[in-house]
Length: 86
Image 1 (cartoon, rainbow, N blue to C red):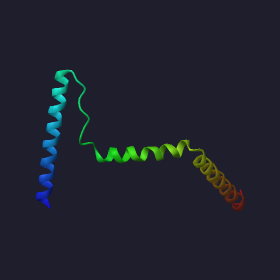
Image 2: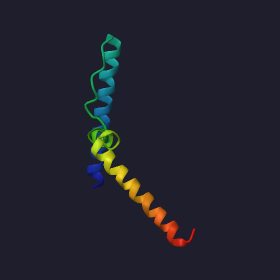
Image 3: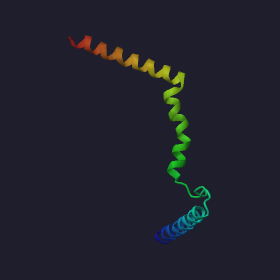
Image 4: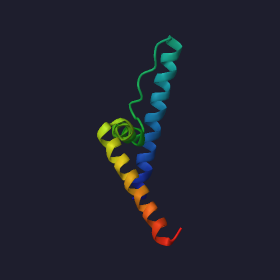
């Protein structure tokens, strides 16, 4: 397992160095650098989930559900206060 991890890290380093060289060459030529062929996996996952996160804030159906939940919680809180003698 350790050997495989070392090989993976070495391969990743060489790929990063190659990409850095490509970017540097593009800058020297005055061109736009190429897109990163090895993007972060975390960023890819976040990009996929971004549309669902936006739905939480802007989708009218979800906003309606959230409003109902807030009203139910407020009613429960009021019932607790009435029951405790406040």
